[in-house]
Amino acid sequence: MSTATPVRPEAPEPLAPAVRQRRGLPRFGGTAVFAAGLALAAVLTAASGWSWGLFAVLGIVLGCLVTYVVSRVVEGRRKATDRLVTALVSSAFAVAMVPLVSLIYTVVSNGVGRLDGTFFSNSMVGVVGEGGGAYHAIMGTLIITALAAVISVPVGLLAAIYLVEYGKGRLKKVLTFFVDVMTGIPSIVAGLFAYALFAIFFGPGIRFGLGGAVALSVLMIPVVVRSSEEVLKLVPNELREASYALGVSKWRTILKVVVPTAIAGLGTSVTLAIARVIGETAPLLVIVGITAATNFDPFDGRMATLPVYAYYQLTQPGVPPEFGIERAWTAALVLIIIVMALNVVARLISRFFAPKTGR
Amino acid sequence: MAKRIDVSDLDIFYGNFKAVEGVNVSIEPRSVTALIGPSGCGKSTFLRSLNRMHEVIPGARVEGKVVIDGQDLYGSDVDPVDVRRQIGMVFQRPNPFPTMSIYDNVVAGVRLNSKKMKKNDLDDLVESSLRGANLWNEVKDRLDRPGSGLSGGQQQRLCIARAIAVQPEVLLMDEPCSALDPISTLAIEDLMTELKDRFTIVIVTHNMQQAARVSEQTGFFNLNGVGQPGRLIEFNPTEKIFSNPDQKATEDYISGRFG
Figure 1 (cartoon, chains in turn yellow, brown):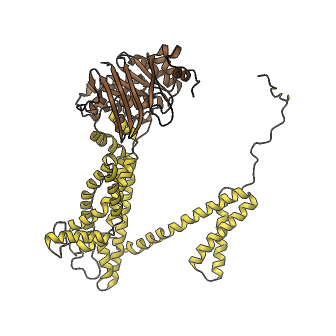
Figure 2 (cartoon, chains in turn orange, blue):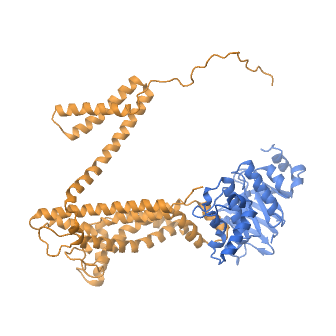
Figure 3 (cartoon, helix red, strand yellow):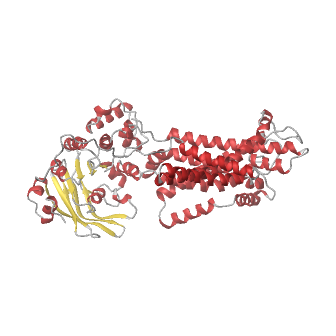
């Protein structure tokens, strides 16, 4: 092994830097250039009579174009392509945000006017025009959704556990297929199912809250099953094996190892399933109906719920109509607030229950 | 506590695929037995069949006899859960329960089986198991911290502590050091040397030096070709296997002339 070892010169020449310093746009330069493209589009649009649609299309095209050209000239081809794709992806994101922001803005600006104490404390008894509230509808929504959760969560969770831990072969495939089919059931069908079911026992024309809860369960169970199944599948098999190797039986392994490991995800999936059904209108319209008075008893008589309340306030606003329409907006706003609160709760659940890895 | 394992005519299947064929071996109590061989030759499969963990995999089954202390593990009246209580297992990758503290991980075998134990007894069990696994001094001040926050080597020793806390008679180890650095490996090898006074230890390893260092008996598994079942080629005292093996295949494998 005596091949020539490289002889180093006594005083090596200073090496050129390995990475050549390249000219580049300053920080936020890309954004600034894109904004310049947008401004150009604004000028052009204004010149031909203002229109938001034209401005959006022109702005994205010009913004991307200007970004690419400037970057190409200053930084070279590779960097320019990077900036172009970044600009495209960000524009797509912005476009996707437009309907959401617009929806929130419309609902808040129209609904905030009646977001007052009366709305949360009064029902609609004896109200024709001004005033009135949705206390009865809020309570109805909470009661019926809670009942639906009480029915769906145990059934859904246990079904998911069956599919992941016990099911095998053909039966499992068939069950998974039907759960998938059930997730696609139109909600009105769920309402008609519940109505037809209870009409057998109580005669036609039956309206009561529990029926609504049953209809919502039909919609909710497949959602709970599917999302819980995915969460349970994420529990590493090694943990099950570790538990079996300690001489722990299967059902104890599931109860004390698998479910606690997945509890954060399970909590999230249940909360999101609730958020999914709380705004359902059609089934409740069919089987629960609407009432102007507060009814806490889901086993007897019509109940008001927020979505149905909003529907009726909009279609039969009374005289003069603007107060009813205002109440409809506020009901929609309250519903959005409830769903947002549920999403926050889901986040908190997954944060607090997630397995901790602190040292 | 330690018990002898007699295996006779054991065939192990995954569905219709025969993974291991015709194993006859007798594993001595209070000693370390190492299983070596190339990947896919059925070492781990054989190990898992010793405490009926093999059948956890869908479609997997076993034919033949595994007798511990005169009792056939695969007898029709034997509950696999009872078997696993007597025969503990440590896996290749450390797998502490992520939801549990270090303390709870050690007593998991007791807690999950809902055995009632006094707090003092539990404390003693935790201390003795962690001392047994050579981990007590490192974690005694943070028993309530999550087990997954330990380093890889510490997690593996935690898993060993968890396995010995249920006081099994046999301890199976499936490549327990393959994910660890040399220092943690040394700690676990020292631990095996201590533990063999109390347990029968069977270890699967890819590291032949490790087999030579820790074991009294060594078994060499091999397979003739892809798709064919693995076989136990040779089972002899470790010294003999590594100096003067009976079989040519063993010598080729050990001296690196394999394949």
